[in-house]
Image (cartoon, rainbow over all chains, first blue to last red):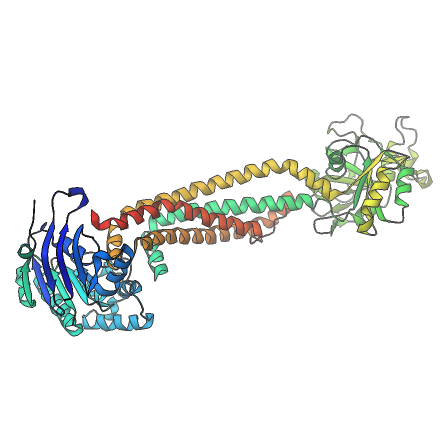
Length: 224
Length: 414
């Protein structure tokens, strides 16, 4: 299993009485594309943050690629995330004052062992396959359209060839045409690199793109 | 990459960064400028007299002797008999001697009676000799050589006639108006008290006083009709400067003079006495330094404030960088790096503008105030000031850096 959650419980420190996550068991196999849906505030983003080691659970095991995230220290989790987990969000995926290439290079600096020249080459390949035209590569990303920004974000998330890609409502700010375009490109690359995809959205219209569609409430037992 | 992020982030906040940068640049300009002027003032002070091995006068405090012989400030306690002077100068260790006779003035400027040895041997700065902008050293009894400032302020030219007064006040009632002197030479600016001095031959001083107190009986001297009547030897002088053949003999000669039986004299080393005097002026230096340190403090506090307010606008960056796997200390270092970049840019701007300013005012300062500024800023002191600026920028950025570190560590915990 690429992702495995066992007996995970999580609550925020400022609201310790309400357990936002309570998952007995949930797992994602290698190469799966999972769409997790649910109403806002149901804990979808929290689940993603726990999976990326951005949040640590009070109880339970979080295993990614056979490694126990809950046993790592903060530094190890940061390093693990840089090497193995890519993220795409609804907005704010890029440093606005850096250009596309710089954003992608920045993402690569935190991952271990890559030549800078090969990063640049790979970045241009990714941008080409994501239909970002070269004249947009050196503009500050704040000057790009939302659709372009989200495509650069895919390149940024995939530059370290992570085994796991986590997407948090990345299409919610896009219109239908841009959304489908975005998903086609994303899934094309995910297929090509055999990346495991966990995609969170409230939009079930995109369910056709995924191999598994689950409501968060199916595996997250909320306790009050 | 780290540098790219830090510098582009600064460029992204041009307005506030530019203001801080200006504040830092001004602080560096002031710091380096004050340190530079202080250094140069000290150097130019210490070089008021150079190449003179010993200054000899009647027994008094060494500062007093220095003040009246070199700076023409204060009054001598007693005179030296000419015979004693000749005896000291006869010592084989002595290479040259400049006798000095003080006590008269002209329009508030002091008159120094001396010999042509003054123009041959007196030097200042880095062994710079006196130079003439016009004319030549005095030859006749009633010739005078003016310091640059005297000539400039009083508007004297070659062949102007001047009347000296006994005593030092501008409105002395005892004018030697029966014995006017003729200007034969004007010296180039030196930045030393020489500029404010009127030089006349020793014989001139004596001739001028020869009618004193008997009254205007010896007018013959003035007309020069009887050159033989000019006293060949003055009775006494106020002080004299000695150049020795070998530096090794300085202390020996100094001891001999101090122990002289004939007359209570003292000899001082000008360098030592100058250093003593400068120490007394040192308080002023400390005040200047304190002021510039406060200017720097204000500037780096401004830097800290600007960076602190930027932390609040940087939630997106914190989020993004943490997602990418950046540890919280990366953000700490990012803020510190921004502070360092601003400080370095400030050094460049402040230092460059000071350099340009110094070059622009250099000539004017020298010509008008005799203050000689060199435009070399990369001295050890200058570099240590820059180091201190860098350090204080780093310290001032500590607060925002710690704040962003904390924010980054707890970012996802809400």
